[in-house]
Length: 118
Image 1 (cartoon, rainbow, N blue to C red):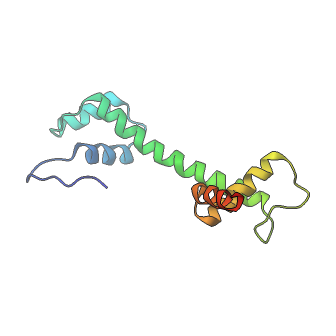
Image 2: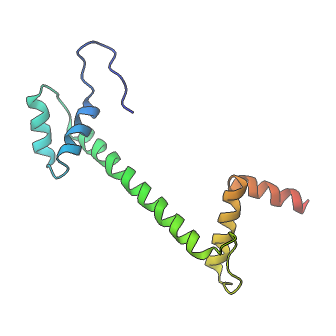
Image 3: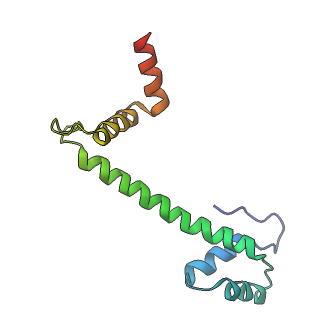
């Protein structure tokens, strides 16, 4: 969430850019900066590109997460285990990642394997 302005009448530049980009995502940078300048908000182009990139980056992260979940669930059986016929390396890696997710992360899985080996 955007930082709240500390002074009365102070404008949050990033919030203004996000609002402008959500209203018109196809707007070019020069047009957006000119529109913000008309409102009295002076923004340097680097901040504009940074804010725009962060918006699109969040969409990409969500898309990658959905794709990863689809891949893992496609290889898992009804009980959460991989089918017995799958013996290739990729399926094995997916099984290990699934097990790590159940245990709470790869660090906890590594600690468990280390404890069992000693």
